[in-house]
Length: 492
Ligand SMILES: Nc1ncnc2c1ncn2[C@@H]1O[C@H](COP(=O)(O)OP(=O)(O)OP(=O)(O)O)[C@@H](O)[C@H]1O
Ligand SMILES: [Mg+2]
Image (cartoon, rainbow, N blue to C red; front, top):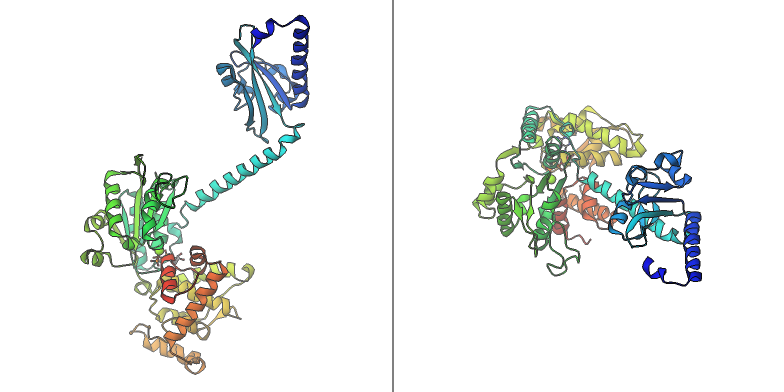
């Protein structure tokens, strides 16, 4: 370009020089900062304001230094190296980002001898919408990344597992040992016994604690979507696929732990694929030729009788043996009755902070405690929590007695009390005058079913039909809620 100008008549050359001169001054006036580097990207000149912004009280202190030492993230070196301008860019600084322009400086022969950079933002109001859009998108990105990282961290620790009964101490010992190892963990136990809690605690106590913990609830995802959920898909790989493709949970969990909840519900074909990935430690997302390495530790859980599924041919024996390395049985609540009181108090503490704006302080009367200890708890710890929560919500008093508690305990009227404890139950019932006060217009089962259906419908409606949120709000497993929605035919 410079060469072309050489042939211009003297007057044109003059105009051109003036144009360049005034262009530089205009930019300089309008810009927040201007600086010039030589062919080695060392600062040749910097204006006072810009130097001050980067901590140099006197611009002279910046002269001769590498551009990056004066302006972190500067791309002036790239401009002098390539000879190409970067007309519009955003430079991140420790304060707000700057909109910058970087131009190469050429000699008569067209060689790049340096570069000039302008940081434009004060007077260039026209850029404001672009700029605020950028800032907003940037903030959203940071917030999303933070909440994702939060969601992929362990929610519970071993300290969250309440209980000092022999069965609880043994389960915690096994889980702590599992945290030190790398082999797969299989968590078995009835619904509501704390399998998910243990999975989180094991991940949180393992060497992978700072890597993601990713959960797949096998029962909650339609069979047709499971494979993509696990392994991801290339863009447009299947009908209805996201245009951009999808990253699978295996890939998201890389370096960390993949928690396969309700593994007993996994369809047979997918079991085969999972086994292969566990053996090969690599897989290909659907419709892609990309091989993804999977350094993932598996924790699987189920409340179904997995050996029975194997015997029935509904769960692959080879996958079962692969998973059945460190097997932990979460004990049912009725097998650790001594924990019920401690659990009830820990939960009341928790509920007290939630209820009535945190002002409540609930206490259980002795007869209520006896009633809790006498019941069989088919729904285990989750059922205990739900029972207490309902009692707390509907109680006018902060002292909860057996009379108040009884209607919420599923088995009291269903005959679910343990056979060796009928005397206590009878005594509690007599003391609380339950029999005479509880109206029985219909059978208990029908009444409970009607109540449950209404309760679940209301909770789902309050969450606009979002099953996962509803489940976590009411303290029910997602899979259980899905099954109940189907069983009651609730419309969501
Ligand atoms: N030992 C425990 N101490 C404190 N809270 C517990 C304990 N065990 C379970 N819980 C609580 O009980 C509820 C159910 O536990 P969790 O979801 O881990 O059960 P689960 O075995 O995964 O049940 P499901 O098979 O139905 O999915 C959760 O709110 C959990 O925090
Ligand atoms: Mg669970």
